[in-house]
Image: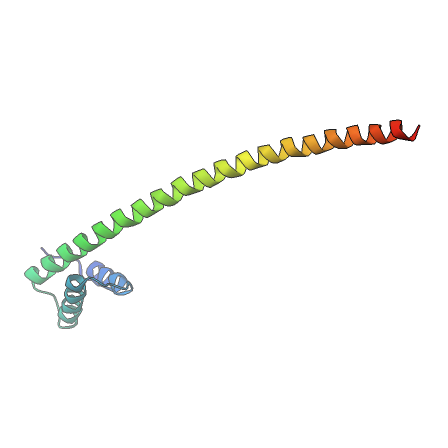
Length: 112
């Protein structure tokens, strides 16, 4: 499996920016960086590297998508709560106005 050197180098650089805790991918990253420094990596090494990257980032994507889905669900709930509270506030404000009107009329009647 041959890879275009520039694209492979860009991929290796991009992956190098991540904080990787996975030992398998860290080792694969170190080996591919060394192999690239020495020239073109052997096909077996490249295949192992790409498989490690695919495994790690596929799992990472699933986790990130699940987190995003949870956040969207929570934001939807928060928006609904905000909508309900705004509607409730409007009812309470109208109730205060109505009660103030009654109290104002009571004050007028009581002064007579």
